[in-house]
Image (cartoon, rainbow, N blue to C red):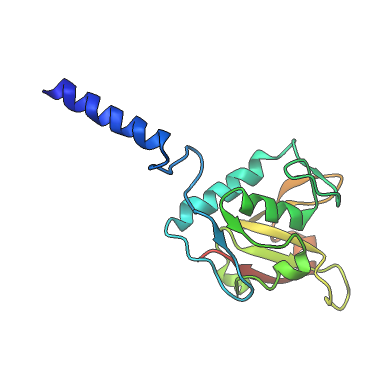
Length: 175
């Protein structure tokens, strides 16, 4: 009796996998396909898993993807295209590869309240009138970003002088 129960359970699992009844994919959280909107956060039931997978996706591109304004998904991207790509690969459509539009997504987060997955926006303009860079907070005072054509994807210290000097705001996309 035990053997037939195991066989039945195994058969059901295989059937679910084959016919799409089970949506768990190793290494990916099931964020389904959700759409971010300007001024609103995206509610995802497995928020921590989704954020960890977005970060893992970004880190996984180190040494593979390179800085370029000529978007070729997963290969050539600038900072905002990189954010667009890693969110999209994890089921969240942020609709834009433009950092000036990404800064309007989600909700404002004070720097003192940053959480993993929050996007951080910078400006190298003296009057801070134009967003010129975006990164993602990954915890412990670190950010993940497509830095520039010399560094490509990198992890930086949020408290470094460049990040301190050019910081403008942060936005939470996933709630």
